[in-house]
Length: 213
Ligand code: CDP
Picture 1: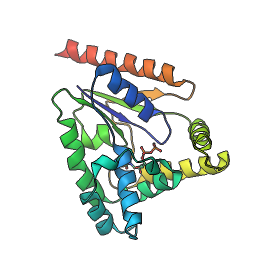
Picture 2: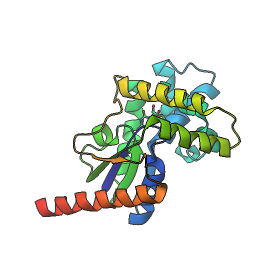
Picture 3: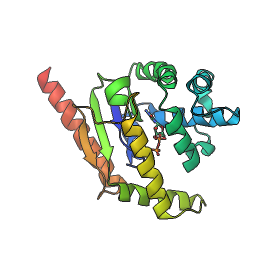
Picture 4: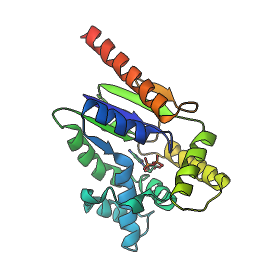
């Protein structure tokens, strides 16, 4: 079973994806970490994030054993990731790794921006997880404060709006809800409620597929 989960920054998709993967005993891939790692490596090489060729070269040399590097979680790396993510050349290199991951015989839970639309258009279940930009900024602000980063909530909101705009308007694989994705709005849901709502949507989608087949 392949479960594709897309949505904007701080919508809760990552946490929900992790819990869904644990629930069904499936491997989980956070594809945002791939773009974050490419941005980290491009900057570390002293290269220009806006240059598609050098960013694609960094994607080609990516060491996937470094995806849990805590340095990837900073706001600066998230911003840099959305710059390298605009390049079709970078996306093409990362697409292969993501498709290989999805071929796992038992299936996989994969979260990102274009999983239901481009990476796994035939996924068994697609969820589009979202929340108001104010609520997402509030969550990200609390996360950053927790990790000792001093930034105002207004600045976080501005960053989130900026990144949403970049992700939604880019030419290569923009963020959008797939036509056959179920919408999960987590604005008024805590993480347990969001997880339960996601499971309900997945079970409903699987039930429908079972009836159709
Ligand atoms: O955790 P958060 O939602 O803030 O970000 P992320 O999922 O780690 O993604 C960071 C950036 O990578 C996004 O703003 C996108 O520009 C890019 N990305 C993408 O283009 N396609 C994906 N499948 C995943 C992330």
